[in-house]
Length: 260
Image (cartoon, rainbow, N blue to C red; front, side, top):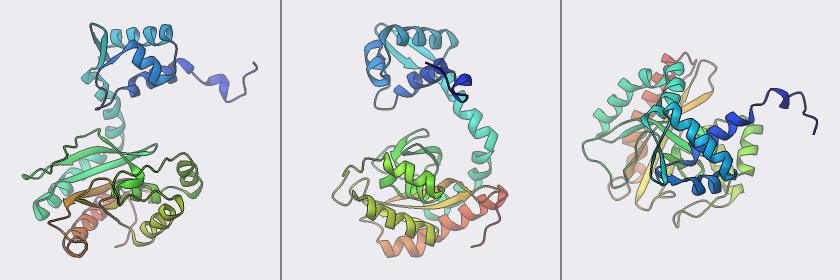
């Protein structure tokens, strides 16, 4: 097969190595060689070579039949975060949000179809669901994900929506693509998102965009609260302004020219 111009510089072994790393998750912290092969659709001999190489480089450890990631992998994510200087800039504003509201404040970014937590400032009273840095949530059913999706260029958004499976996570989850498009248009228009129990029953979440010097949405500031404690009106009146104001300040520190 003749390679195209774009394919000549494509390193397939790097793609395969990264797919092996990404096969691990909080739901699958330990995997056998066969399980990695199944998840990545790679042959067992290829997976074996990749795992042994990653182990030698310090990214993977083995224990009997099982492999798991090591903290060395965090260096890959840190390279991204440090290049943006995003978490360092956002930290004091996230602390301010938590101080004022008494609720955990999160900073997230889009990765494929998921919103990924980059940093969190926890409140003293932690909600039932335990979420940590690196946790991935489906973008379509979360407020932070909708802010991130709404911030995509139109062609990119269409590509992303075409590959989405809108599974019903609760009785409230939007599972119709046309309806989701309408919700995203609303988010883009109003500059924030509020999602009512679509990801988890009894939990409402709100998010506001964080923009870079080109005014592109690169992250979100978000918060989740118990529905029994906060009505939608309470959220809009008491929590949303705090989240929006601090997301605005982070954006300004990152060089964005934004107005309230």
